[in-house]
Amino acid sequence: MFFGGSRLSGREPGERQKLEASVKLLLLLLADSDGTLDEAELQYVDAQFPDTERTVKARELLEVIHAGELKRIEQAVRTLAKEGRELRISFLELAIAMCLADGAVAITENHILRFYADALFVGLGVLRKRFQAIAGQPLPDPGDPGSPDWWNQGRSAGGDAASDSGMA
Amino acid sequence: MKDLYHKLEVEPTATRDEIAAAFEQQPELKAYSAILLDDEKRPLYDQVHKTLKTIGTLRFRLDLDKSDTWFIQRYPDFAIMPKPKLGAVSREPPAAPKSRDKPKRRAGTRAGWLLPLLILLIVAVAIGLMLIL
Image 1 (cartoon, rainbow over the protein chains, first blue to last red):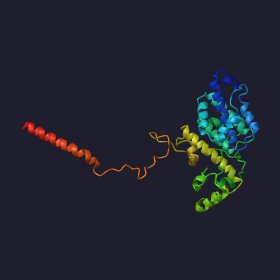
Image 2 (cartoon, chains in turn blue, brown; image 1 turned 60 degrees about the horizontal axis):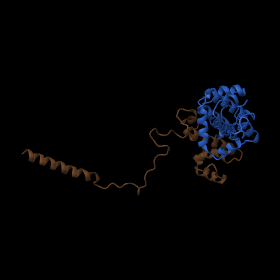
Image 3 (tube, each protein chain N blue to C red; image 1 turned 180 degrees about the vertical axis):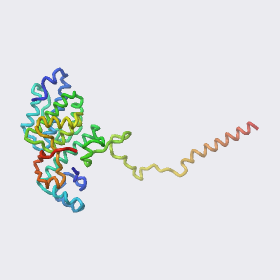
Image 4 (tube, rainbow over the protein chains, first blue to last red; image 1 turned 120 degrees about the horizontal axis):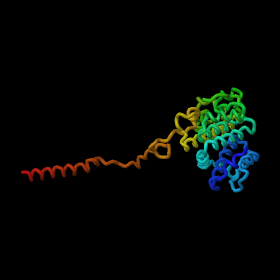
């Protein structure tokens, strides 16, 4: 599964590049959030648009995240939020799949997924359904590593809160 | 999740010693020292703290910071409250002018323009009466 391809055909090159860069940036924010971004994930992000040559590379966009350029991230969210519902949900599914690639959704990834669902006007309900469909299990509660109780319940620094369920 | 750094009044980049000193200043937060003074727990807390800070700021910028959202309910420490409808972009209240910058109102300033107006009125009435008589 990749994001680009036929669903973006017929668009103006400038518009297409802007959308591609936005999708890549938002995926990278997600992938980088748990501090374990590696070369394979960078390639995975670039591979979402295999039929374009001039699009900005994931490694360059990573600099935007490390520099804390929130304005660029905000613009990326706004760009994607203007797209049709089908495309926005496709992005969310891609984001979910990326989170699950290493086996479990990290706490930071969980928070960002929920933010994307809200910011892209998809909603938490749809996120939960799509997550259940892709992961085969409910979207876990992010957990609270700022609470001594959470740590006392045997959570590890790996941040896997998969056994939690429910959501306020 | 609580913003422990904010409560301790230290930066997220604070050293272990600085954090330990901050906990001594605020004994009511001592239970949380088991997180921030633990070399294995703190990195995870820091990751989530950074992410929630980013999300809180983005939500504010994207006008997703309404008070009835799950984010504000669950993570009030990381939510930037809605900006005033008629206000400026900044959520900070306008700084009070320093005393030396305050325009000094001179005593009798208001009377300064009222008095000539009153005199003018009296003169006008007097002239009117003279003309009538």
